[in-house]
Image 1 (tube, one colour):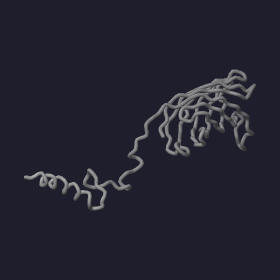
Image 2 (tube, helix red, strand yellow):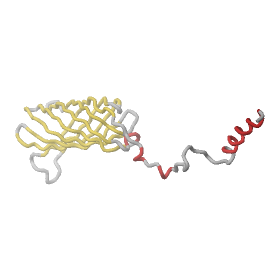
Image 3 (cartoon, rainbow, N blue to C red):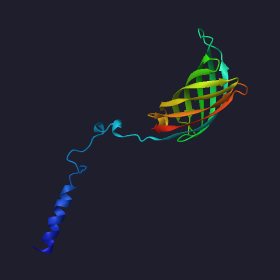
Image 4 (cartoon, one colour):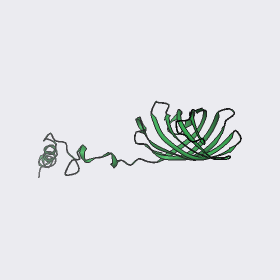
Length: 178
């Protein structure tokens, strides 16, 4: 076999395989966009949490609220993992269960430094000592906007607040996927 013959044996199949104008693939059936779903991409859990300072004010009771309900509007300034310097607003319901204990829950919207929103709910317990409060509980992430549209996860944390100054602070630690 001549040198020219060997070159043709290699070159002809190579050029013929690329001459049809079709996209070639290492699999027999190319993947279509309908075959790939969002659920095929696993979201990795990442560390979440950080610290927030808060200022709060009491809201008027809603019609029909029992005497042991306290409604609060809370604004946060935070430094949080995956949000950076961020702000948040929460509407909280405190249910005073005894002279020294309470339960609380709120819906929170965090705003990341780039404007993306992260939605969360928090439930916890509190110990009251005069005007001073110690609280702890779990926050659960439930979607948002931008990179947080599919966010899930939770943090556990706690902090303190004072009804004398209407200020507080808390820390949290957990995971988030988005």
